[in-house]
Length: 140
Image (cartoon, rainbow, N blue to C red; front, side, top):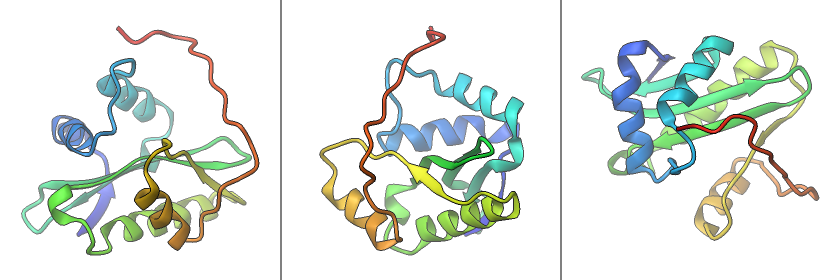
């Protein structure tokens, strides 16, 4: 897998990947999420491609000056268990360290023990916090 920065022509393939990985939700418009990320810090939006240049993985990384965040980590279901997710996470960590980021965070929806175990194997641990959200803009 080759890792590079997202390009606009990747959008359809990335959204398809997210849908096949079960990452999209009806209340979030993935095209708007991509647009918002690209307007903020496009260098932190990574895609992994196979030997034919096909998008097979993604990682949307955020940094607010205090913590780094990992969103939309996805690997094509047919290409899993080959280390691609680990490589993307390591690249995200490298980019965040270069920016002086002291800690990376991610959220996992409840009811996915295999996914929780995967992240634990990468050194992530559940924090003693409750993550709360409030919608500021409704995606149509």
